[in-house]
Amino acid sequence: MPKGYWVAHVDVRDMERYQAYIDAARPVLAEYGAKFLIRGGNREVREGAFRARTVVLEFRDFETAKACYDSVAYQDAKAFRDLVSAGDMHIIEGYGA
Image (cartoon, rainbow, N blue to C red; front, side, top):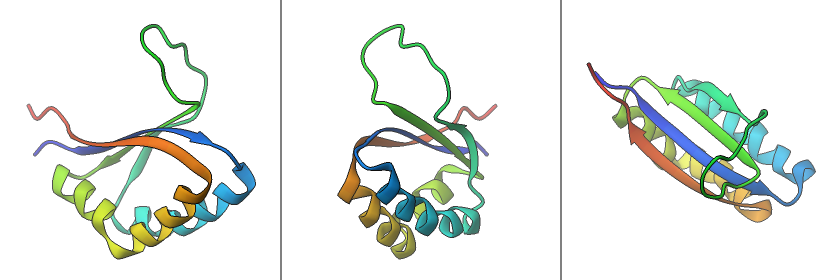
């Protein structure tokens, strides 16, 4: 079964307040088995434009990735993020061989 991924590009306006989102999201992501593949780090933009921070999380499957995002607990955590950042979030089904 193909894995599911969250791919987010985020500009954070207040990193200190963004920490509240990180703290609230951490247990929810753990509950759904999310694994961080990319969390910031060095990069080079070769085409187009990106936001300051890129995050990629891997889930067991596409349905789990969607369920995590749609959960009440994650939406509560996301409310903290929405106050201090702007971004793009995509939930993507991986390639299943």
